[in-house]
Length: 113
Figure 1 (tube, helix red, strand yellow):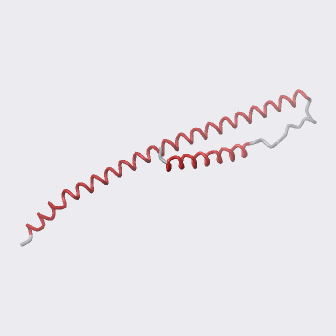
Figure 2 (cartoon, rainbow, N blue to C red):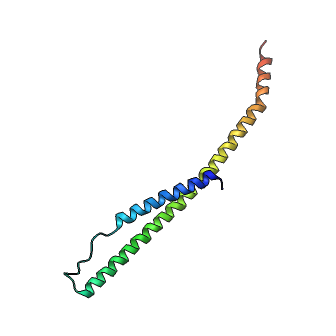
Figure 3 (cartoon, rainbow, N blue to C red):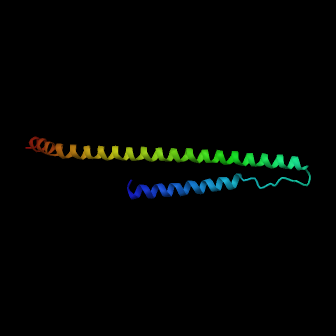
């Protein structure tokens, strides 16, 4: 892996971690269970329910970030393959121009008196 690719990977990871943290913060439930208006058992049940919901949200966010990461890596791979294909085509075009250049010049010079 070349240094440029490593740098791109590092930047991608930092961006995705930043997005993850923002999503976690946005979905964090700031409401505290009201223990004064509920019995002790209800409060514990509500607390467990809130914790389960929070864990579920985090799992969904982590899954979404993992999916995004894999999609971005796949896109990068496709981008590199396309770039290689385009460079190869450009080289072929240049080669054909060099090969056909003298032929075109010869036919043009013989057609003129």
